[in-house]
Image (cartoon, rainbow, N blue to C red; front, top):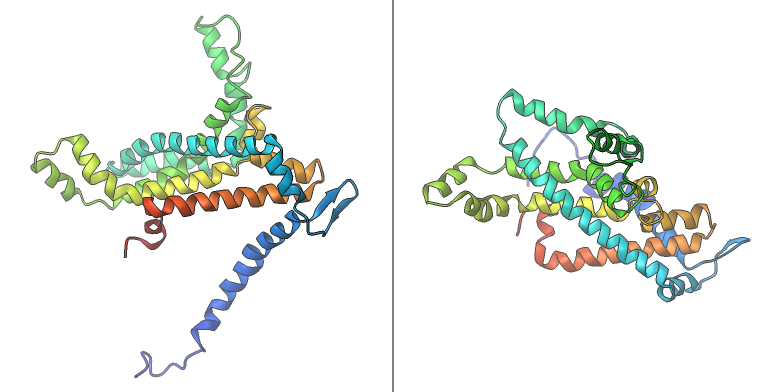
Length: 293
C-alpha cells in the first residue's frame, strides 16, 4: 500500500503518539483516585493515618445516619439544582440562539461577562444581596413591604440553590445554545407549514434535536453541584451544608483522612452508578460520541 506522503518517513508507531496523553491520564487522573481508594481503607486516629487494610470508615458511613442522610441530601440538592438550572437556561439559550446580527454578539457577551469573574467572588456577591442588611431587605423596607429585615433569605438551603444555579448557569446554557444553533430553521418552517402549533413544534422538533445539549448540560451541572463546597460554605450555614463540606472537614479539621477518602469514594461510586444506570435509557452515549451508532 503506497504511503500518503512518499517523501516523508514515518515517525513511529501510532502507539507512541498516545504515550503523553496516557501518561498524563495515569499520573494526574487515575493515580490520585487509586491513592484515595487506598487511603479509604487505612486507619486514622489522633496520632495520624496508618496504612492498615480495614473497613472501619465504610462501616461508620453505613451505621451512622448522619452520613447517609447527608449523602441523600447532597444528591437531592444536586438534582434540584440541575432542574432549576435547566428551567432557567433553556429559555435563555433559546433567546440567544434566535438573535440575529450584532445584537446576538452583544447578548452573548452580556451572558459570558459575569463568568469571567472568580467563582468565589460571584458567590460572595450574594452575601450583600441576601444578607440582613443587604439589597433585598433594604429595598423591602424602603418600599414599606416589611418593617424589619427578613431573616430567612440567607444561611439556609434555599440560599444554596440560588448560589448554585447562578454560578452553574453557563454550564447548562452553553451546550443547549450550541445544540439549538445546529437546528435547521427549515425544519421549523416545515412543521409550521404542516399545521403544527408552536408547542407541538417544540415538543416534536426542537426538544428532540436539542436533547444532546440538554443532557450534556444536566450532566455537567449535576457533577459540579454534587461536589459543591464553596457555595454551601458561604451561603448555606448549618442547614445548607453538603457532602463536600463534610469531606473537607474530615481532611482539614478532624485530621481523619481515611473517613474523608471513604466519603469521597462513596460519592464517586454513587454518582458513577447513577450515570451508568440512567445512561441505559437517556442516551448518555450520544453526548460523548455525537450520535447513535
